[in-house]
Image (tube, rainbow, N blue to C red):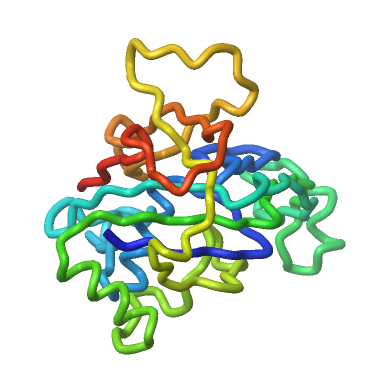
Length: 231
């Protein structure tokens, strides 16, 4: 087992949502943690079929792992920023602004993007020993990363700290436990849905589940905190 400490000032873990508001999950998701770990290990999840405009994910050859996520201290705070989305409108929409734009994209829409601040997390990994060693080598700069710098759900947000933690120095954390089918968690306000694996082309292949953080912080990782991520 390998445990990483992650500290980041900002991060965003987008759901598949279009429109003027782009939300974020309240914490790092298993799918995002998986992508981050593979990036560090120098394993590229992407492939290009020459047809799709979306970023495709390899369906074979990617390692299967178990991941557990823990909150150190308080949950991240959710913030938002407003941006201008520029595009070329379809049809005659916005044509009155075309001349003023002088050849630039002349349809401007305000959009709101949510992000997290103050991320303090543990990412626990159970995988093949060779993969765990490859992640450690990647953190030491001995493995070329697949996507360049590691980022926290959005390539605008980089980690402040990402390092291996020994069990002896592990701090108590609020581990996210999965709510299995048939299980009841009561009327807790912190229940959320986190993605486990994603498929940007076939949405039916995207997998998610309900989770909630432990109320009492613990050094022990509960059984229901472990989630299998496989492609």
